[in-house]
Image 1: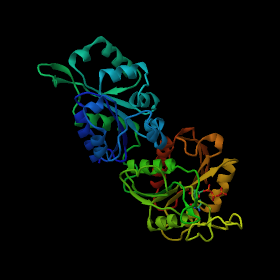
Image 2: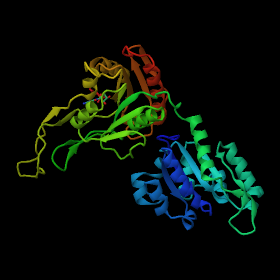
Image 3: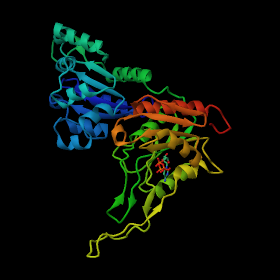
Image 4: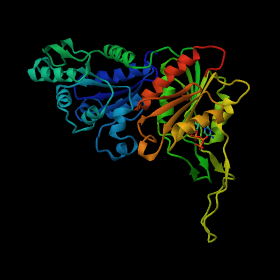
Length: 411
Ligand code: CTP
């Protein structure tokens, strides 16, 4: 697999070459990538959202003002939850909109809102391609950092038309994607031969069959770490609480609800070379969850009696057998971040703590960025504010470095 765990956002605009984009989706998925698809209105004249969605394995997106999409994903998340945006085919019209910064439909809005690299595969009639307006737009896009693949020369769909304007073939586009991602991603292979266990997301602790205690963790940071570790060549087991994120490809994903189920899944996932505990495990559960729905009575509201959940991180860090060589915990704090993180490192017996500020003002919980401190026995490093993907890649690089030193536990 040349694109393990890579997330491609594919924007299909309206040209006859759109049919080749269905093959492109298939080729990308064969290589381990996940593909999310946006179709412009014109694209839907050539291929249907149903066909694109069926091949991609998830529904395709079409409308900026689709209430359901905005609620569950939203155009900003569409723009950010990917490693690369690919526009294939890129019509003259969409290129003009991109060059001018327009945002009047889902595709153009996402292209304006993304901070990820963009690759376009132009496709149009040769006269349109050589038009000065297109040349101007192309020059502008290239100056803005947009990468291109093709177009190629050859016969056009219209009889008797030939020249430069054919969309690059799907495999050429795949090769361009591989080149681009190799330049921006986690160095491939730095964790090959290593097994990494990651916990992610919140846990749900049942009160009765319909109610539960939970927290605001989205699982984004933990999932990003699992993905970065897989990209780096590790055999990854991701133990995930209930999250709205898709399973990252190229790894074993175990879904759990409660802290106790998470502990059992983690223990079953050992031995591992390193374990990263990014889950926001509920500290407490209800002592005795009701087997039937608790009803309102005249006696007033029920009293919930709580008991402490097992501490998964501490349990694994203190194991006598099968302790991973590197045990990394997270500390979610709302104040005195470093001080509390140091105390947590000692108390839980882990090797490193990634401490982050989750106060409401930080926007970390559910957000896309993270500002962390890496606390080890050697000291504290303040990392710059980065996307959760960047934090994940940086952490994976540090884990790879630490695991290179064999036998003795890494501090
Ligand atoms: N953790 C865990 N099991 C628990 C609680 C926490 O594995 N039952 C792990 C988390 O995955 C994280 C680390 O412990 O890596 C710190 O979690 P946090 O909730 O910040 O710390 P607590 O131990 O709960 O301490 P406090 O609530 O006092 O901050």
